[in-house]
Image 1 (cartoon, rainbow, N blue to C red):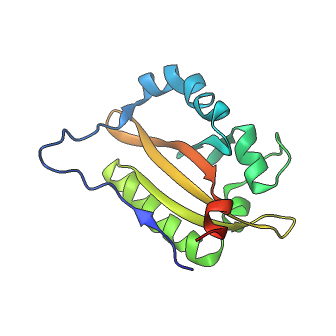
Image 2: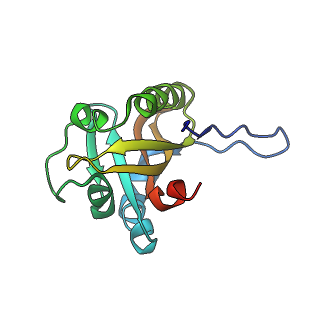
Image 3: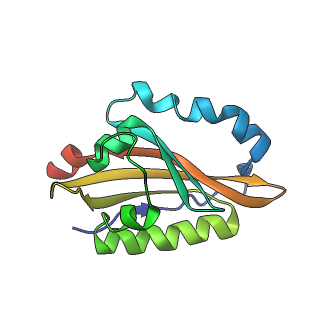
Length: 149
């Protein structure tokens, strides 16, 4: 199975989305972490680019098979991604940070209990003074969808 990645190319006639400036992002953070709460099998996440610290909703902990509240180290989390997904994530993430953009792709992970899952990751950038400071978005469990493909 391959990896699906979609980097949103914006047509010239559609206004370009602007990265969320941090004061707005900070004010909306509670919304970002509650918006997906009612969406089945989806959760929110955030990565502070200054120190690579991760913040996850309970649904993301569940998706990864990690007890909610467990301290997270991004390096350990990356090791849960299958190699092809990890490489794709690295490329998309670097590009999004460099251009202050967004991306969506489907990744395969292997949870600590050995169970394999597929998730759809949607990511966007928050900025301060035009500089990327945070990545944030949704992670949705799409394992059942992949099993039926």
